[in-house]
Length: 361
Picture 1: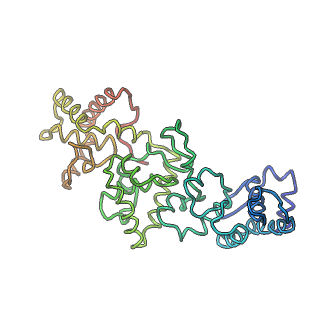
Picture 2: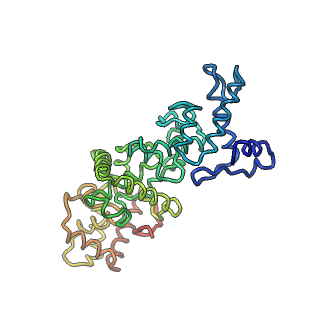
Picture 3: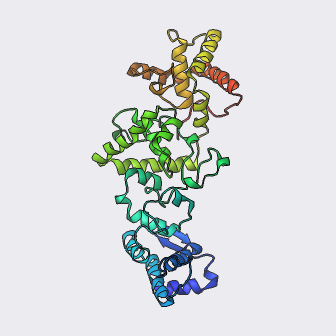
């Protein structure tokens, strides 16, 4: 579509309600197209501090800028569109900032300008920023963290994932094996997933996932490890695919609440000891401490190496881990774990309602 055709369609009132503008395999509605043109007009006001959408003191200058807006909409390549955007708005403009601060998240940005500037400049962004802007998605955008109201609690913001959907360790097989150097990278990848579309700090994510605060250093180290091996783009895309799947079909488990219920390892141990004393151990040779560890890992999606004291152990022999995996599928073991679960949830005063354990289909 050329410039004249675009102008004709903008003038045509009947077309305004259904116009969709194709850009990078995306479609944007008429209000976004029209708003982009006004954004360009307001930004190019030669008077310092001019009011938004005003023609200003030099209408001829403003009208000439209109063609920059049309040129932006006429491009299908983000890099070419970004050149027009730079000429019209300048670098780091308020309309399309490359590095949006928390304060900028209060501002509503035009989705077309946002799409262009983030898509064209993704190579200049750090991996952490790429996660924040979700540049691996079909429509990158700025986080909306700063617009959170106190009464919203833990409700996820528009572009981020709820921490209720994310276990301490990502499910086995979620991320390709060749992208991990050790099994604890599954815990680090859970933090990377929690960073998608948000400004959550690594320390905040580590604490919310019931990890030591010192775990905050692992995500930056993992990102450097991936970049050195040219694996970051692959992992980023896989994380985005996981996020899309979880948003479309959220887990039937609230992992965040489960982590809170079992935060006190002593209480988990006490409940387990009482249940095992009453029902007996369904497997000879396994004491209540090991049953407590198995329950905690199964119930929260965590790893016993990262469990709260006194359940946590520094390392798990392979045969020990394999035995845990095989035990969970046994009906008599499942029955015992469900009894421990009832003890924990009765004490918390709330019934979970979800399955004991879950993995993405």
